[in-house]
Amino acid sequence: MQRSILRKRISARLNTTAIALRIYSINRFNQEKFDITPEQYGVLSLIVDNNELYQRQLSEILLKDRANISRIIKILEEKALIIKTKDSNGRKIFKVKPTEKGLELRKKILSVTKNIRQKITKGITDEELEGFLTTLDKMFYNVIDKINIQI
Image (cartoon, rainbow, N blue to C red; front, side, top):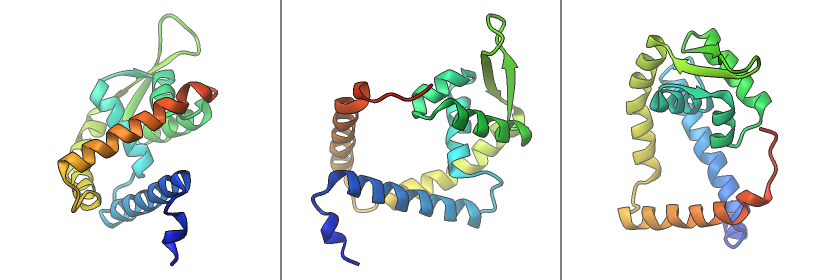
């Protein structure tokens, strides 16, 4: 394949890299027979890390619209990995928190995600990785205030 065509096209390189990483993660999750997708795991992991979040917070953190977050939360709730409760201050405001089953699944998947991270950062020094992440942050902050997502 002619990947050199994309060499100077930053957006295309970021996108194709993200796609490759997503496919690799999906394949690993399928190999391990996890009953959850990497995208769903990302949401679950964020909820576990924070113990409890509002749906709106998830949308803001992940830059996903309400419909997408609602769909993922519904799936996680059906799998008994999270509990969704109405906030006492509003009719349509929901908090989500992990169940014991969600906590256990997160622990089980954690070693696989560490392995995935090791695979994708193989041959990359800590300094290179830190520089890359710093550059990504700069790119993100250059555009984040110029986009509009229905959250």
